Image (cartoon, rainbow, N blue to C red; front, side, top):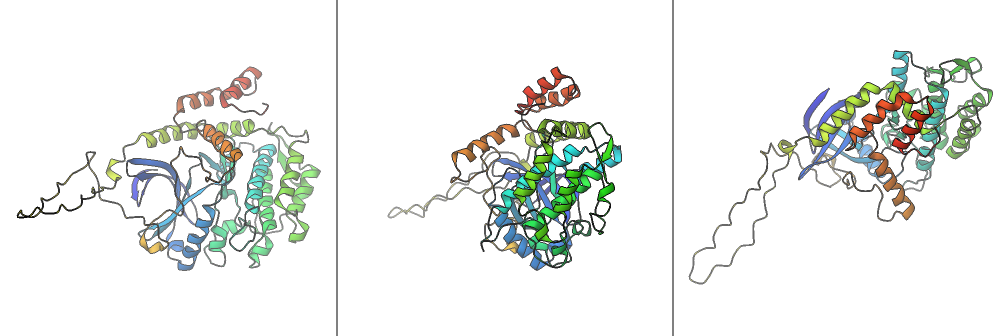
Length: 442
């Protein structure tokens, strides 16, 4: 649904998702000269926005999450309030959540191959491994706590990112947690505990099981019926769950935390051991091809929408800034008062009403504000203390970002979409690999 709704320093462009916590939008962040960057905005519903304790925790958790830098984590850019609505803004990822992928597969009768499910699980485990390696202000390992299919995003280029950082510690102990997402909580979280790193392993195991079998958790023991579960091959054939994969899921979904994998690195290594055992042929290219096959029409439509958003005129939403008055001139002896300074109006398009200010202070009632400085989209995502290797990785991601849909190279990317149909013939595969710059074998 196309919009151009003023929302503080943001302009809401398109509604992309509706959930129990609120509505998610593609939005433009406006700076003094026009478009600053395109972002994703979760606008919380009245139940969350009116909950004083939850919103206070959201402010704290968002500030902590904004300091995290990892390729597998959707970066938190800001949090604030516009009128009575709280929101969180994050980097814009061009893709779909696992929940949306599962829904499309069910609706179209399209197979969700086991190797795609395991590839997503491996990338998610890597992101969680990075998160668990960070500490909060008290020195405890950070956990996500609210992993669900709606929190895992698969980009159209095959990358996987995890979003929703800070939601669990902010909403825990309230009645605001969506019922459908409570089904993915570990037993110790359902019992009222704060959760730990092994709680994330349990939740990721549940999401992986659903992606493999199409069976969503219903509150019963997820291990029931595992022996008769079937998975889908890339050819669309349903086959019994391989014994090593069943053993991995049993350990990840053990009721007692001590019986699970000791850490997320152990779970990731176990998944990778299966992925590269010879039974599967996973590559980023194959996952990207799967996404392009499943969402071909959506990708082309969104590429055009993003290009229009980047080229759009946001003059009506700019803030009219008055020039600073020159210092008063001292009157000459015997003369009159100093002359009035001339009023100067900066040239430009007509301006609309000035948006609400976004002061940097911590009080949410004072209006929307970022939790961390938001760099322009062309700037690297790391701090000045980052190592040379991390800076190089940032440059690589910037180059990759230019290959994702919706950027300045849209014609080239649309051409890539059109040649994806040649996937199964070697010459076509080689051409696609060269166009994508994918170092992995195809």
